[in-house]
Length: 301
Image 1 (cartoon, helix red, strand yellow):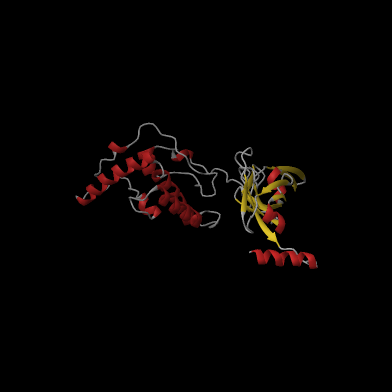
Image 2 (tube, one colour):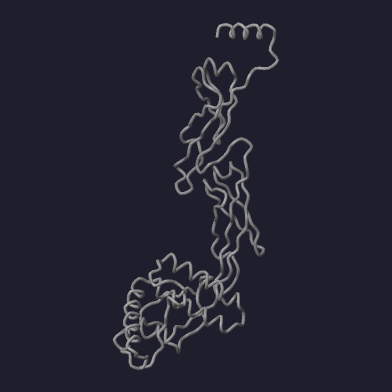
């Protein structure tokens, strides 16, 4: 049987020892370059795109790749001996029953359908007589939604209007800037509807700074409490609490309030911590008597 050998490594431009990360990266880069949406009406780009998809089907599947590597070794040895396609024993490599293959038609990087005779013979798949183009999936859309830190703490909802419809979206506790919420089927129209993604932006807060699930806040502390000890009021996103201050607390000291931070997005029952940094404020507009007492303290020290 005369059949053309397909060099899938050459198709993707990767080394034969490339790992899955390299193969996936090469596939995505080439698929974007030759995607029919990028090259409308370009028949050669469509054929190249099919070839790229077919190569990825083999090299991304450990079992197919192992079989293909064994075949490649035999084929190269046959070539070194001066043999050509007509004399090579392809029959020993033919598959029995067609196996299932995962073609990423619905993926923006997916194929257009159809496998080469080489692929059909070695790995099985869809017969040429039944090749057809699977309807292209609709585009995904992304929209930014800004919320406050308080809303990110407790969770909130947003109401959107799309195609005359009212969509209420629940934003879970613990989201951060960059978090995305998927609304399935609310994207562009195609063979299958795309999705709408809401990209969260948490607005800066006037008092709190966020670091992951932890919060930081600066707390003013009067000189007398810093020297003698006492309590100071600390704001949290669940209301103010009183923090005990030990005597002779230095300005800049940070106190950790366990469990007073942000909820964990994956498990809202777990929370981060709040770090309260005290900043000692010196008294102003001293009376003559107060100044006299400070002078006395100065002499004592």
